[in-house]
Image (cartoon, rainbow, N blue to C red; front, top):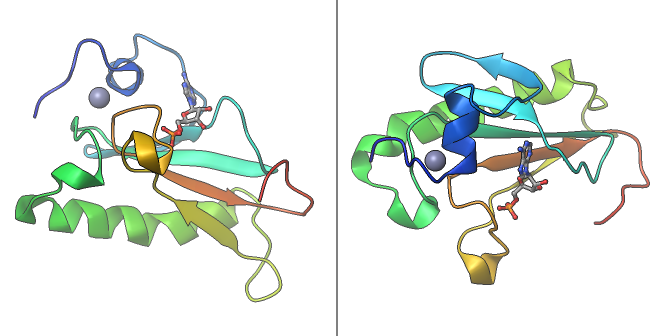
Amino acid sequence: MSADPNCIFCKIVAGQIPSKKVFEDEELLAFHDIHPIAPVHFLIIPKLHIPSMAQLAPEHERLMGKIMMLAPKLAFEQGCLPYPEGGFRLLCNTGTGGGQEVHHLHVHVMGGPRPWKRG
Ligand code: AMP
Ligand code: ZN
């Protein structure tokens, strides 16, 4: 799956839509959610256009592992409070029934002092 010209996150990867970047390497991009629901709220995405977790294939295993390893590092760098009193929440909405609105795989990383807007 290469870039989808109609995908908003592919456009962010391509620099056609601006984002507040948290992290970037050759495979992944992390940027602040435009409508944060917690004091810390950013998204980690693969640069590759994978629509959702429903399309994951064996060749994506290393990439998904990399996202999971990156999440705590960036979460604490971005201001999530230390474990165990603090911490963070990961969320990966999958499919319309799962609450997914942008169909380019992304993991929400949320944290920081409560109360949050939701959850
Ligand atoms: P969902 O697909 O429901 O898991 O969530 C998509 C998320 O992407 C929402 O939290 C939106 O606020 C966020 N979002 C949509 N467009 C942008 C954008 N241009 N920059 C940053 N975040 C965005
Ligand atoms: Zn995309």
